[in-house]
Structure formats: C-alpha cells, structure tokens
Image (cartoon, rainbow, N blue to C red; front, side, top):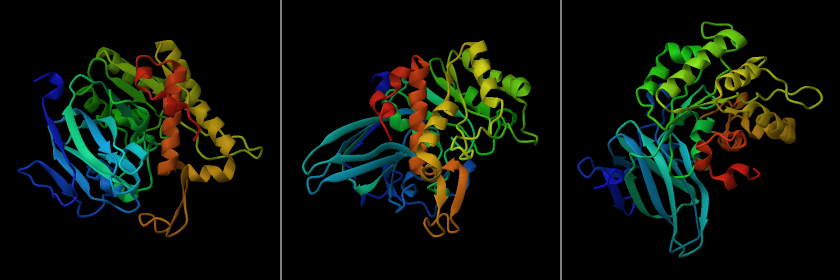
Length: 366
C-alpha cells in the first residue's frame, strides 16, 4: 500500500446510517451547539442556519483527500459541504437532474475523527471516498478572532481561516490555530506557537496575521517597531528552522470610515512595521490591509455591514439580541476576506504556495 493510501473509506452516504463505533463511520448530531472556541468540539452540521446531521469517520490524525460524487437522479442539486470546525469546502455547487460531478478537497485531522456535513438548498451526495495523504503540505494559521474557527454556537460569526480552503486545491490542507483575543505576544506566551512547532514539517506553510490585539494597552500589547517585530520574527525563525515557509499577513481594516468615505486606519504603524520586517527578512508579505481598504471603500458604509456581522434582533437564533460588529465577519464576509487573502498570495508571488491557489476563484469578483 502506498504512503498516500494508508487508510481510507469509500461508501454511499445515507443519513439513516447512524454512527457506529465498531463500523467507524455514520451520521450523528451533537447534543447541542458549542459556544466555547478552545474546546474545539463544534460539528460542521451546526454551521448551517438549519442544522444538518454530521457524517463522522474515525481516522488516524493527518491529512486526507476527500472525493465526493455530487448530484441527484431526482432533482437539480445545490450542495454546500463543510468539514471539521465549520471549514467551507464546497459552496453551492450546482448539478442538473441525473448529473454526477466529482469534487476533491483536502482536510487536516487532529482529533481522530473526520467530520463532514452536506447542506444547501437541495444537497445531493452520491458517494464519499477518503484517502490519507501523508505527502501533501499543511497551511498553519496563527492569528486572532478574525481568522479563528468560530464555534458553531456563534454562527454566523466566521473567521477567514474557516473559508480559505474554498480557494485552495486538493493538494494542501489547513490547520487553523488562530484564537480570539490573541496578540503576537500572547499567542507565544500561551504556548500556541509551540504547538504548531511540534507539527510543522518541511514544505509546510505558516501564515501569521496579528495586530488587532497587539494594539491594546494590556499584557498582550506590543509596540510596532520594537516588540511587535521581535515577536513576529520568532514565527519567521521557527518556520525557517523547520524548513517551512513563513508568510506575514497584514491585518484587514475594521469597518470605520472617514467623512469622505475612505477607510480609517485603526492599526496605526503596525501595518508598516510588518511590511518592513517582511522586507528585512525576505519573506512574503500579504497586504490584506490594502486589499481590504479598496474592497471596503468600493462597497461603502452600508454594504460593508454585510461583510461584518450586523444583524437585527432575532435574525439569527445564536444572536437573539442582534449584532453591530465592525471587526468580525459574517460567513459571506469571511468568504470574501479569504478571497482577498488568496488574491494577495498570488499578488505577492508567494511561491510555492501560489501553485495551490484556485486562481479563477481567487480573482473572481464577489
């Protein structure tokens, strides 16, 4: 058996096939949605406005390729697929009556169980095939709440780390280590970078986006041209020591506008400090700040509410009091921020990561 087929599943998914531990797979639903990010116990079926059952498959930890045969013999199908902690893998894929369409994506597993959920207006999945892939690289994400795997009990709050897989081909997996409230300093102090270090391998990628919490005047705060750069360099050094590829990602802007309709820079000198460090260390710099500024200014003050999490009371069951959040994103907004990240990777010429970007999707208009 080759290294890329050490473990696998191949079967027809039927919701009536309940999860069975001896069998090792089947559908189930969690007792309730999780609201606790650090527990990492959310199921993908709960990341839909109307929750759906989750397909559970017991697997060894590692990277996997999942191939789905989409379609229905009875009706046109519109299928959305999510994995793990709400990672969007396929978005509203359309098939006609009787059409079968194969789609493949990669998934990173670190809890011994591959979880998939099939939603959408009229989902149609005919077949599931899972194969372990020990040779494909992993994209590790180190960041804050704008990137993190938001828990299902907070949906539709979403981080772009949950959406970036939509813009990647099947030859790279995503491991999102971002956590809300963390700065470049506190992420290290809590040994979160050390956890990445234990898994980071030659040929992997480490994308680092911090500033939102570095700006705060508290224990996690840093200063742009001194401690902020010092901490960021630790991420760069760690990746290079592992023969992995470090990439710095500038923070996206918040939803604050000047009177003339331009975006207000609430990040001060942190963006420039990161840019200068990237130049000094000769590592790729993804200018998400500039990309988001252009995007938000094109949308304007009202339409950007759809990117960020603005909601009326009662609009979402998880947000009974509504929301007026100018920092964090809705699901659709996080998709567009992830698109900007993918576009930024291409613009920065961040090889060899560019080869994994689905260029048509990354450069298409929202």
